[in-house]
Image (tube, rainbow, N blue to C red):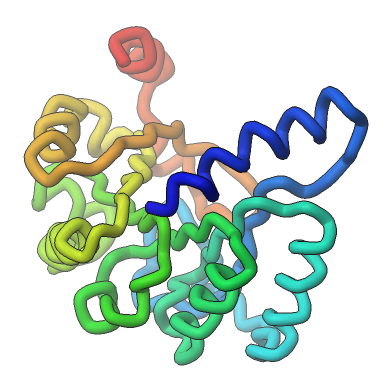
Length: 217
């Protein structure tokens, strides 16, 4: 990862809070609703909104650069379903943004050469194979493990996002061990309801389990 870009983030935060310069420092752009998975805690894949064009994305990033934005995160759906995702990453990199991409991992190996200017890949390994596939879909575990390996082999930092549900909340040790084994970072978050989530009541763990895991982490 380009360290000078990362080091610019604290400076931007200082200007934002200490000197009253109100800027969108970190921005996530949902580049597509399309997804080849249908996770139980997400309903984005049910939407069919028109995607903005490549040129519109470039203009959006130009505008964010002028405002002082430091990080661009590409999200979906599955961002790698966009044919131009490599161009978008390259353009953001050329403007000096820290670039991140959220993915289910299914297309990372196939398109790894288009991710050369990506700073951080954010997949979502959810637990052991049987747990991950139950929560996502059959075969998803192998895809995401291969995605993490491919990213690390190409020097891309990996920040794995774990959505804690009743299925995987008992597998924190497995995830910590896997992170150490494959050299990636872990980010844990509770499952919660928001406008684009699915029916999370079906996967919500008991609150006492949440408290136990949070305290331990």
